Length: 455
Picture 1: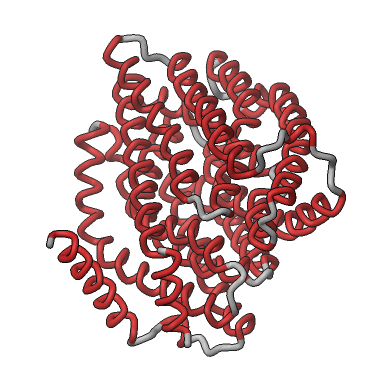
Picture 2 (picture 1 turned 135 degrees about the vertical axis):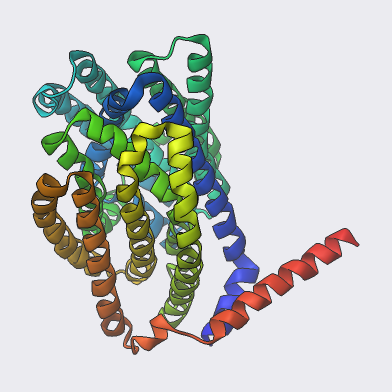
């Protein structure tokens, strides 16, 4: 039953193709991010890289705090009702909330950033204030537009939004670097302008997916508001925990360490995320794809995705670690090699954490996000304690060890939760002898299609 459902979904909805496209996009984004780091590290040095990292950090962090779970709620509710008028009402309600909350958050950040960044230069503080004020609404809008595209299975649009910003950013940094005009101010501007262009382009493209009418003419729908915020509040705790979990490491560095440490960490962290390319793509695609299916189908798809991705990524880990250290020295400079051990730990953390997020997507798909919230709360509590124990003792390596511990805890808790949520034994998630046959069939179908195209 599960195998038949899997084949039906792959053939009808191109699940494998969508995951492949998202994997390529995520890998491209990571490569572009690496190009950003190389250019900035070479031109501005380790401390300059750290100052720019703290400037662009705040909008991402603060947007996660005030998003109220609305992107995930939008996907869930649109999947339940794809009426044009209903979707338009959802979008209007979201933007009525986002506009004032963006302004309030930006103003609060403007006055608080000088306190939070007292160890940074005056230029870095002022740039962080301006960048945060303008970028919070852009980041929130991008998240909503991406969620809307995914809810319509328009993954090429969401991937385009994801890719366009770092691509334009890389081009601008290269031009600035070659012309000799790259500094902290121009680098910050090069991060801001692509975000503006991406939101404008995404809004124009997705306007045709929503409705032919103008949003401002639509009345505010009380039922749509209730549906959005009801589910949004349920997943907000999860989003909040996720934001804190993924950004707490930077907060700890800003609080306890130096701009130089943040510069080193930003580079090795970005390089380690290459190992998460496929798993991140699977997580992004699975939730909108499996939401609304029967529980048996959801577990079959999610379990297979988890097992195969973990097997592939662990196989690639050991040889890739040696290549990663080589690239670290060649591309960024010898001074970054002092963070190589941190890179090893973060790479392992990336794979374990990525696998746990794939499994967690099954809870969101069945409308049980509180299960993910529980595991996130426990993992964050452990992380916070270990951050303050390991970081003062071991520096960046201690920070990475704390993150690895949290990833292991998340995976263990998720594996304990699944048997109870789906009423199945744990071995159904950990092993299935049909996985190898499934991979062979996928490769065989690819070769057959390729042969037909050639003939």
